Image (cartoon, rainbow, N blue to C red):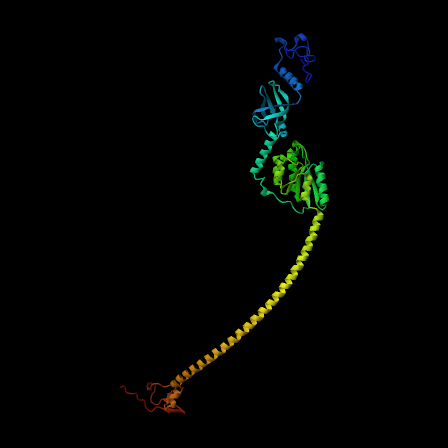
Length: 437
């Protein structure tokens, strides 16, 4: 038996099944066709193979609609669910390799349209609709994916306006992440070149559309961060369909933009919808051209501002110098007046002090003179000279020490007697003690 695969596998089949007069299906005699009798029973594997050829060949890829039921992500990475309507249902599968084309998983009960093709598994003969692309009614899947990504980023604080950084006012180098062959790059280079030709523009090419775009953009952001010489970074592309722009709603791209050490401008060419990249970037521009205008100040305007600033600085410095000179003169005059006033006041204070010193000195001298006179009178009364003047004599030892008692003398002792008009050297003849009363 030979079975030919393809859309022409069963032509002219009868109600009896695959047996019959289908030309080219079964080689051999017609009265001995496989499956036509117990003796010529058809093996199950042959039947399932024939089913696979017939079903997969008869039904090309098509769009079907229905309600999602029993959605289950399997541990092998595939998604399994049922699509149903009011009267029928069909088992569906999304292979893991096809999931990148879909924004997110569908919700239970969501009405969707799916593009796919029948697959028949040889071992069981079970037909499954393999979905390659799926969309919900309206924007269900896209909106769900967008809100999931936004919630995850908001939870981590990446949408907080407080973390947004300002664009440098005078950038020297602008890095651009976009397609190397897209119109967006041409627009950015043209606008920056026209506005300020002194700014360097560095291109970091990346895919901005298709399944590989998110990873390509993330890698380009990493390269820009490693290079580290750009002052500002533009990430974006020109306009396109929702599917074309969807890579800028990727959570991986959003987190890479948020982690960029370089201030970033999101420049996705769409006017109405806001992408996740717009929310995470430090600034959002409606178009690539608008982003170029945002980061590149007009050189002529800068030069005019510099000239105006120079003139203002000259006028201000001149005015401040003039005011400073006047203030210095006034201060100098004030200092001179203050010094003169203080000198006059000091001179007056000195004169008063000198007069007080003189008066005090005279009083002190007079009191000292009087006190000395009193002391002199007292000394005079106590002086032995005054005693001598009254007719008394002062006995002394030969060396001049005063003799105050006769007990210190003996007969024959030599003494000196001092009188008011001279001295007498004598020798004691006798020593007599005064009798006590």
